[in-house]
Image (spheres, one colour):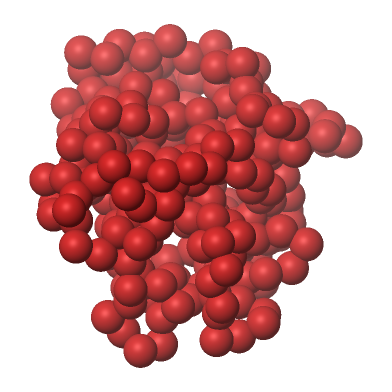
Amino acid sequence: MRPFSQVDVFSTEPLMGNPVAVVHDADGLTDDEMRHFAHWTNLSETTFLLRPTDPQADYRLRIFTPGAELPFAGHPTIGSAHAWLEAGGAPRSDAELVQECGVGLLRVRRTDRLAFAAPPLLREGPVSDEERAQILRSLRLTDDDVVDLSWGDNGPGWVVVLMRDADAVLSVRPDWSSFGDLDIGVVGPYEPGSECAVEVRAFCPSIGVVEDPVTGSLNASIGQWLAGDRLPTSYVASQGTALGRAGRVHVEKDGDTVWVGGEAATTIKGTVGLGA
């Protein structure tokens, strides 16, 4: 039996964020055991905490959706860091943790909330005409509905669509048959003076998640693209509204680094029977 936590991430309201399943002390589990358990939980992500292989890291994390392993994801990073600390994890630094994952070493800052440093983008910049046509078809949009598009792949493969406002984001009704292997994020601004600067939605059927409630990796991509330009250098994003959630993601650009943070609260603790 191994310790287990389920953590609600990116909301100040109980049970209104995005849950992540966290298996502690996961060394010795096989890839198939991890994959099957993640498929069984049916959450957008399930993570496994392991001993690090890099001496600079505090712990190693593997991240699975119901259908695939990811090199990086945001809400699992925040939730797993919270679970590791709560279970007695002792970081090398009081100021931050260092997580080892598929994209390398990731810094997680400890202030009034946990926040990770957005990893470098694997792909960024304009989309091709063919890609644009598929994205518009997938979201049932026209050229007039879209302000701009950009690749923002930091591991999960995001391409990001900027829309004219938050209401337009909430009105999107995707055509799932057109997505292929695309993972599409959509963002639009609220009126100045609103509680949140933008509304965000994340569509990723290719990895077994139709719409993710609250998505740290996508908000990191958006911050790297828009913070300090079309958005303030520090803002709060709303996500999950279309799914009845109340996600709040804090994004801050500090020099060349974009920090993505939010609340985390453990909702389930116990043990799970996995492996030998």
